Image (tube, rainbow, N blue to C red; front, side, top):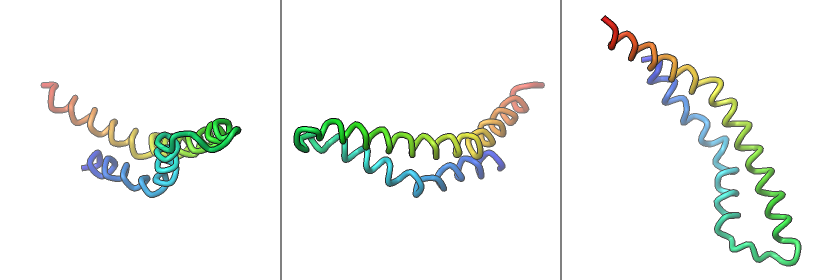
Length: 82
């Protein structure tokens, strides 16, 4: 049950990363025609958005994801060993 709760907790981080993911999606499909320095501005914005997402990813991974994987691993070992 702990693994399930932690796995569901993974989705609690969706609102935090929603802006970064939407921004990256928009950059990927905008066409990149924003003037002469549009490419450099897009790269800078993309780097900023990826850094934001990566920060939340690290926080999520080190909290709920590790707990859920550990719980499921312990459960699997318990079931598969005599």
